[in-house]
Amino acid sequence: MDRAIARAKSCTVDCNNVDKKLRQILHMTDDEAHFHMKQSAYLYNLGVHTMPKSHHCLNMRLTVEYFKSTTLDSDDSPVHKFNVPDHRHYVILSKNVLAASVVINSSVSSSEETRNVVFHVLTDAQNFYAMKHWFSRNAYRESAVNVINYEHIILENLPEFSMQQLYMPEEFRVFISSFERPTEKSRMEYLSVFSHSHFFIPEIFKDLKKVIVLDDDVIVQRDLSFLWNLDMGDKVNAAVKFCGLRLGQLRNLLGEAMYDPQSCAWMSGLNVINLEKWREYNVTENYLQLLEKFRNNDDEASLRAAALPISLLSFQNLVYPLDERLTLSGLGYQYGIEEKVIRTSASLHYNGNMKPWLELGIPNYRKYWKRFLARDERFMDECNVSP
Image (cartoon, rainbow, N blue to C red; front, side, top):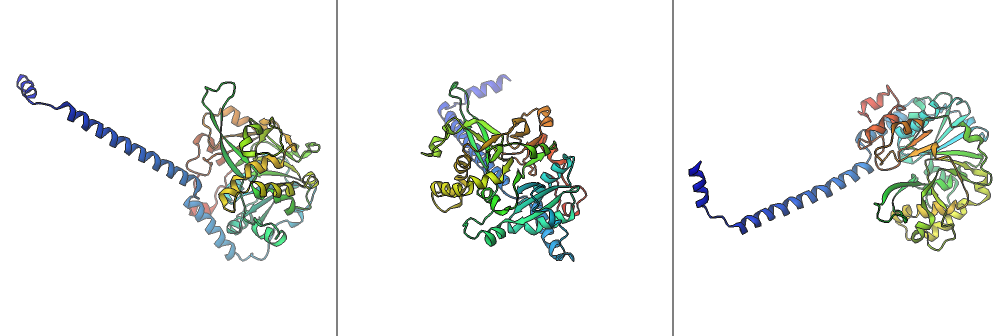
């Protein structure tokens, strides 16, 4: 040991060189960590916005089977139910066959009576035949399912509207700070609002008086039949209000439009729509006027960004507040929600990036969604669909 110590002492060490070498290693490690963080964020964003391979396979298999079916020309759908005003009509905008089926299955499973229940699924041309075949194969108690090609019906019946593409409900990530406690860290929320396609629902369902609009990332856990007897007065849109964000906080976005700065924002997900009052107040016409104001150019990003101010202003003073216990939001981004709160909520809204049908979904919340997923479906097995 003494010899080793003596030998070590005989070696001259330049501390400056050691310092430079260590700093170089530190900088290289820091750059590498920064690169992996950016790569991880990119891959996460890609995973969130890309359809899983198994889901794409399922859509393709269903579409092929639809055209191979010998009953292609014999549609057994109960068409006589689709336009009866006295029936209970639900509208779902979706491009995801599994998501749409879970919404419907959860709704009928939670309902006491389904004979007069009709679900209208608005989808795009690409997913239309897959949806048609899926819902022709699967029954949802005594309810009826009407799959509609949104793009076709807009082109055929409403050619004057330039936006023929189906837009899904828009979600905006907002950061909210407290004026009373400015030192507190701002919190992030996902605010979901109507897309541009929602504003044509009264034009598509001209014979209906009232509908309930469900997002396809919602599951229903309680019977919602009481909503059909809801007295909304002169209001058009019954929604859960989100008073963590008031219109006055969005003045830079809303511009010089007339609005109450203390008015709360509201959430899509579960909305009761009085179509008669909608038509009476010309909400669609007001929407088109606001669209001209807030649409900066013709690109899709600008169009989608305009959905937030347009949705909030179109229903100014026309929102009927629903009990906030009716819908629990945040299951697509917010960790730590108590299980008791989840179980006692009438409906769950997976707004946020971590949808329950993705592997990125929050595991503790996905189990509630998976309860209503179809079982023993051979196309799901063939495509290895296992959310």
